[in-house]
Amino acid sequence: MGDLHVSWDDYHASIERLAALVHESGWSFNQIICIARGGLRVGDMLSRIFRQPLAILSTQSYTGEAGTVRGFITVAEHMTMTTPVLGDRVLLVDDLVDSGITLGVVRDALSERHPHIVEVRTAVIWQKACSTFKPDYAAIFLAEDPWIHQPFEPYDVMDPASLRGRLAG
Image 1 (cartoon, rainbow, N blue to C red):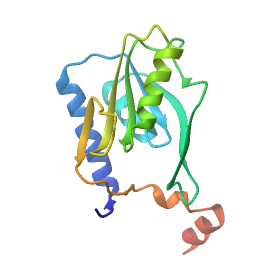
Image 2: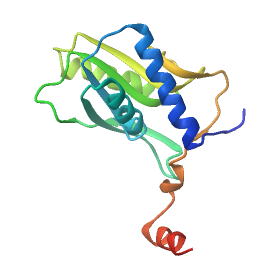
Image 3: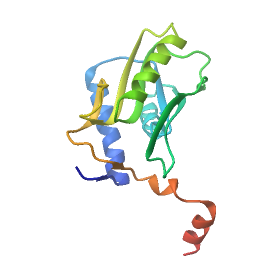
């Protein structure tokens, strides 16, 4: 089990593959909710492709050591959205399903907090075989359990001073 290094091109192509899977399923939805932070870019792209409103729900489960230590999951009490009312057929998106805890907790919280929701389906770029939660849509199934190095990770260890030095470079 090695590490999986993902380029920006591969990252975007994987989100496009995910969009095609959702489209080909024929399922109709009227709201996308992305789990921040990992699902932000995924949600943004899907919102643009499907022309559906995007809501953002923040969670935190990885902390310390550049976001590589799993901690207790916290789900924000409020969502950020531009529509006056949350849709009732929700596509819940994140970048990956690893243990499955985050996606399961958030899906359950949505049902409890928003009883008007009729259906929630889940979509991720990467689904690891070790996950206890099975998403409705996954662009890539990983039979192993690699640590996924996403193209934006250099910013996890960057600060303004190092960025200034890099730009002056």
